[in-house]
Length: 103
Image (cartoon, rainbow, N blue to C red; front, side, top):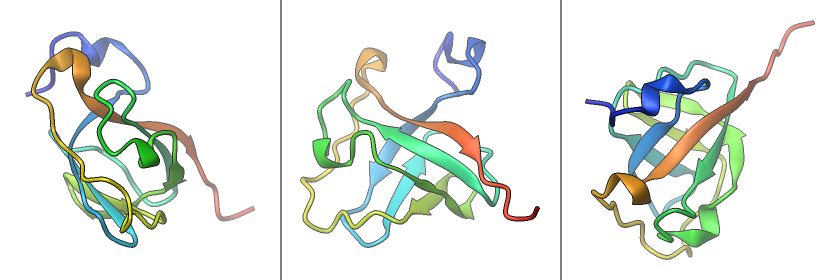
């Protein structure tokens, strides 16, 4: 279930419940993210301060499942991600563009 009010914005923000310390970083969202090939996304963790090293990083999402994707960021040396259940402190992934690979 999406948090109240978060569906009133476009593009929709997806709540992050997990980020691996790996290369590439694998992100798990609370609800299906709806991303497809070529979506450029930005990770926002400033609200809860967890894994601050990944905050603001962008990358083309490689969809792994309806709720997981990876971005080309090496997070192996980043601090661990902690999921906060308070809606005011959630980390988010925001779609910012679509990369068109054909001209």
